[in-house]
Length: 308
Image (tube, rainbow, N blue to C red):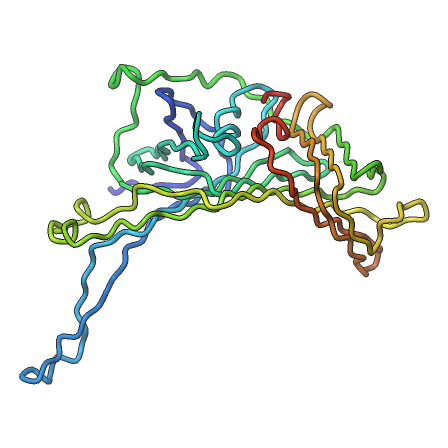
């Protein structure tokens, strides 16, 4: 009898820098890859009856993946946080890694992965979460999950006891104004805009005979980075004077986690915001902000559990 794969049974692993890490992924896992089908006409002067185009499939598009992980009180989440934030040492290129999705009767592998988006989810009475979106060179099924016993170059990082962080401490400051009273949502998103380099050549096309020999993307360039977000606050009699305003050259400080030392921490300078009034049963205001500064080390202004 056939055995089916269920998403709830999936285990997610990252292999990076010679180490294997298991991620505490509980929801929103998705991944896939498509191929480009270039059609050409078969109808000719002598064969007018061939009305259907034929396919030429030689090129793979970049694979994509996304998942959501909870913020932990210990350092097991550091590897994915650092892959989102940090450059490859001595360059302005993002670090890459391999991602494995292990199921009871299958293992999928995403090779040469890069994180293109990280959304920090901060909601009252909820666990802190980080949603990761990225792209990869190639997706394969039937891969082998590397272990220390099968690959001496791989170190298995112990899974250990994991404690998820609830939002118990929240500090939001825009300029010199602390907004804690009435803040009901905070969203922050870091975008790494990449472009995959052209990987189609005549020589490679000549040897394509199957999926395995298709032309897969392999290298990319980082074009731009963006850090932006939104702060929602109820408008009350003691609200600040920013309602329906805009400002530039503002600092933004956000601390969200179990305490002032544990959780997500943003200490940003040279930000701009536009503030708009939202008309509903209860009036609210929304700070839509972006960072305009160019820190040489993004990890010095964005931290997780006070770890750079």
